[in-house]
Length: 281
Image (cartoon, rainbow, N blue to C red; front, side):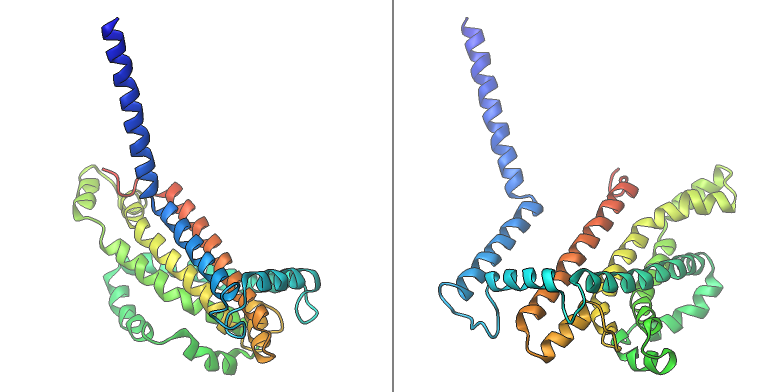
């Protein structure tokens, strides 16, 4: 009987310790910390623009004012165009330029990584172009391609192209030499060496380039839509700022942040599924 009581107490103690560790691990989880920081930011925003009026409404509207503006835009649209059309126009341009950059940059980066001649010829060109802000190329895009959709897509393409091609090249070049030698010793030919060793080993760096290119492409879409666009979130923000519709400007900015967060999270989930082995021994 005494042994049973001791065993029961030991079990209860271990359960309490396990629950304590679980709560502690949750408190230190970056996801929970991120929720806490967002909640604190939202509460401070509400207090400073609502009850206390620390920040004037002409600089930062209250959450209630933005919710009201969002409902109004959802019902009536902006400048005679439904809100979802503006969002779809921005997403369409961004995804077109981003997809085109992937199609061109990933194969080119892989080729540069495995071919020293191509790397020697193209690397200086990319190193010259890399410091140039994409926004500085907008006047050239207008002169060459006009103010139609082509110029906007090309600007977004250029914004992500360099990040993807350079990260892809770096990923191939940093494949451990031991893996390559082991595959050759096991009888792998060039095709098998590339697809079964070099490409999988370079995937983490390629995914880093894709995520960076995605973020930059979505950020540049606002600048791209300054090229005579009549639809899009960037157009809505610029036009609302011109007529001092501050609430509409903030709604557009929040839309950009929320959509960017969704796209980045989606790409992170894809990376976790594709590179489930990364970082594991």
